Image (cartoon, rainbow, N blue to C red):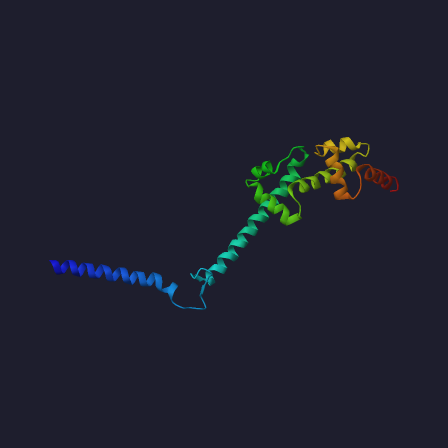
Amino acid sequence: MKMDYIYVWSILILLILINGYIIIAPFCLDAPEVMESNENGFSVDKSTETKDKGSRSLNDRLRADDLYERLITYFDQKKPYLRQNLKIKEVALYLYSNKTYLSRIINDKHNLNFNQFVNYYRIEEVKRLFMEDSSLNIQELCTRSGFGSMATFSIAFRYYLGNTPADWCKEQKLLREHE
């Protein structure tokens, strides 16, 4: 009876050692084509790590492209930039994202922050409105395009069109007269 316990324990210990060897051996053996040590001295399987990073970055790019397309569609169709107090948080919620990620996407694609991106769309709206009705005054163009103040409107206008709103409107009227 005592021999049976010794025999069972011997088998269990042997199985544990074999399993331990099978699990740990690949990390301890030198296989330079697959295993490399990182800065902490741990072995890392470089072949799967690169595949993971590649697929992860591909997934990240696909997600970013999808979010960007949804953002552009939202701005083109729903025109949220016409609301004076539009916040990035609102847009991110509408697009089922977060404001940090959305901000990074805008910055990566356009090299603009969220407010600059919104102001770009607002300036495009000003141009569209003025082409439809050149009798609109500057204050009307400002409010109809979503700007909250004339100061912000003028700054954005100069930034994107290189001119003051009044001078740009005069130029556009002159161009129309000469057509």
